[in-house]
Amino acid sequence: MSHILQGKTALVTGAAGGIGQAVAWALAEAGADVAPHDLSISPGLSSLATRIERMGRRAETSDWVGAKLAASVLKRFGRPEEIAGTIVFLASDAASLYIGQTLSPNGGGVMSQAW
Image 1 (cartoon, one colour):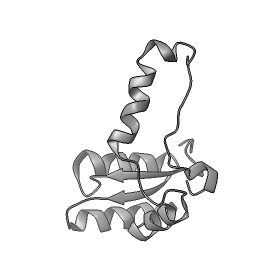
Image 2 (cartoon, helix red, strand yellow):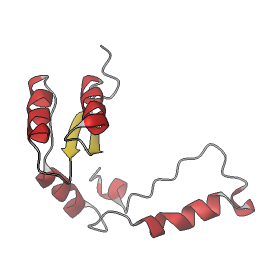
Image 3 (tube, helix red, strand yellow):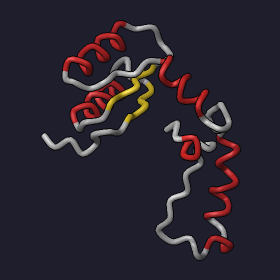
């Protein structure tokens, strides 16, 4: 199988079961390291992490996410209202020159190379 996501890490929420677990597994099969998380306490999450690691990928833990946040400029994830202004702008006539662009609201993660 092609490892098109080699060198990338994917944060997957709801990974203890169902679609979230299937997505985490598919990303690992595509070559990504995976940070599987879930709000529930479930053996599904730890068994998923073990299976991902057995296939030669890393299954990152909450400690990894915390370290990434600590290394980022803002030291936190963005809030929906912080991204909403960008969406309003992109939907307006003022954004008419923004064609095929990617805006990355990552709180300075790229600047600090945290992500």
